[in-house]
Length: 102
Image (tube, rainbow, N blue to C red; front, top):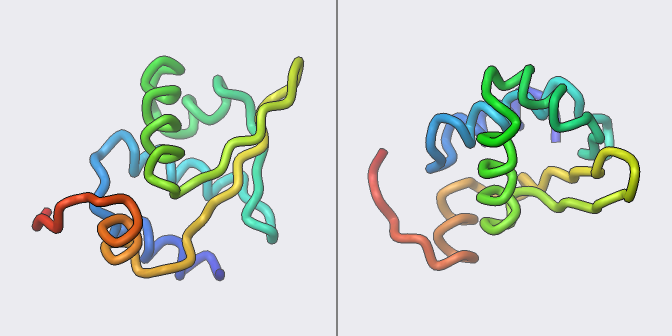
C-alpha cells in the first residue's frame, strides 16, 4: 500500500484523535513491508502525546486488528500495520463495532 493510500485509510478510519495521531506518527517510521520498530518515547514524541497515552492507543489498535505487535525483550517492539480493507468495513465487519457516523 502506498503512502497516500495509507493516509486515506487512516483519515477514513472511525478512530478517536489520539489513536489516529499514533497511526499518523507510525507512518513516519514504516518501511516498505509495513513494519516499524521505534521506541515508545520516540513514537509518543512523534504523535505529540505521553508514553502512557501511546500505550493505551497501541492497545486499542492491536485489539481492533489495525496493528500487530511483536515484543522483543530488551529492545523496542516490532509493529506491523494491517491496513488492507476499507477502514469502516474492516473495523465493523471484523471486530463487531457499531457502524456510527463520525
